[in-house]
Image (tube, rainbow, N blue to C red):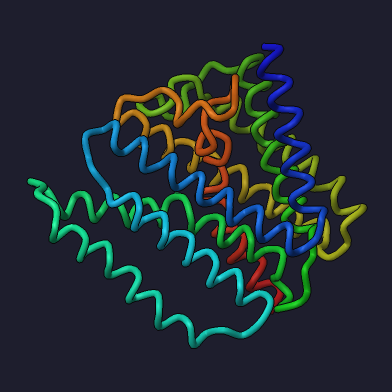
Length: 268
């Protein structure tokens, strides 16, 4: 428990620092973090007996994030034509391998980019929702605070009142009582945030909190389903007492794209 608490403390400090130290640190940090998450994903898939093209996948994941993050600073859409060339390397590389199921390997290579890169693209985009050169740390900061509040509220409420299983087949410990506890605590955090971050009204902050609770929980379940399908408990051991990076960001997988879509439509 002590190791878990110490790891959690430094993890929070690093995450908050990545948001508060300016746009360039923000972009560079999540570029590196995304690459580590993708590397972790491919490691898990290999444990399941598949052989994704890890090198091609990592290069393509890096380039996809770099390209879309660059759009937040300067118009560079003409470089999008390089992406199909780079992505085609995944198919070409498989031609030179002697595998019984080449398209399973190709599928997992691309799934890694969708699973571990795309959600962070949307999270990164939240900071630039008002357009290029309009970096605003409040929204990604608020997202993280509400996501953590949801996790904490779900854990405490589930431990104290949990009786009814939420989705026992994929996550036996999750309960409906814990889910609603997470929604309440996340919404309370949203109300507090609305007093300090006035870019959005309190109703909009609370709406985001509810979206994070619902889709963050679904993302957690999806990641649990993925781990169970390859018979592993934790996605990795990079965070002592907490497991891997994918374990810590599973709530972001589905919540970030949904929240970005919500912010985009209310901003326009």
